[in-house]
Length: 250
Image (tube, rainbow, N blue to C red):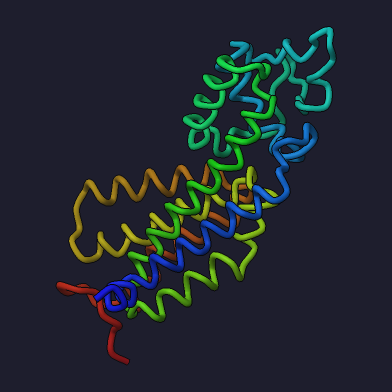
């Protein structure tokens, strides 16, 4: 009975294996304990919106001139005629915001500096990415189960979760937008299939919200837009809309 249950849920076991692997690797190198890691490269620019908004209430970024100089290498502002601002748009700060809030509460209750850049905030960034990858894998599983058995679904999940750059972007570069984009696209694909099965204004509105959100968070707008256009326009060419989606006859 247990074996039969496990066989029917192999794809969930595959997701569990991927998630556990990423957690173990993250805890093996503890990058969040290094002050010059996690909040680095492009992340410095989009992440700056969170502490600037919720801690310093200063989107002009005047707080970076702190006497301690600790923000000198943490924020890359650009000068405008009126004020400074982060050099990139806030890609995924809305998705990270709940984790930032939890980190801020913890930092204030502990001995860490509640400045938006201490260890709890770096830790929260890493595990926000893991959370959204887990969500993305669960929705990818739901989509694959429309067409394939548990065995094929499990293999595809393992190939995507461990055999692609997604694995790197949930371990060594977890704060980059890739993990968040993966989650949004996985949800978008699933609800695209749901829409063609049972169209409604609510579903198309939700799809538009997902597409716009991912486009806003994408590092490459010219790449993300064709993806969503393809998902909406090309899928119907390959599938018939019946009670269940099935491959269209050749």
